[in-house]
Length: 277
Image (cartoon, rainbow, N blue to C red; front, top):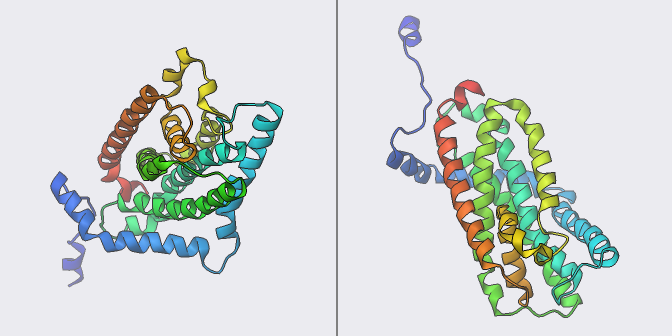
């Protein structure tokens, strides 16, 4: 009996066909809900700092950037209160940074699951984005409070804000899939992710408006996909901000490419996750 059992092997592998894999994603949707809900409970249940931290980080950054860029450097505020200008940019950036950080480490954190049972591995990094979405919604309440404090009324284009959020989600998931796969293969890659996030904070128009970038450099500056997202958020929230359509369209195209190639690389390396991890 033992000899017969020893002759059987359990092979963990993703669906071979493209259609089968996406069918598996739908069939394992309850696992996606479970992982997302588990991460939310870990972050917020029986803790104060979990909820507070999602507010403290963008709020403190807004204060620092307002003092440095608004008070000291006297940067233009596009006709809006400078704290609102900065916070409108902090919302998508904080969502992107949090999603990138969580998704890049998600496969390592769930290593035991990956090595014991088959399910579409895409579920793991995708579920971490839900936690960042909850943080985003909590942080958005502070923006509403700022608007009330400064008696600032947004224009009708705030209704298209979910579209810019969708772009931020697509960009964060595309980068996240890439980094998650690389983190499995190269464990020291987790030290690179904080540097990428910190560097992105400095090169993105968070503490200042992208309109101060010279016209001949604006298209090149828009190679950073988050530039288009941040400009979109400001345009939707502030209303009277100049919108650079060429840069936005470039940002949209790059976001789609990043997501597509990130997904392809993730699927290509997914077969080896259970062995390497």
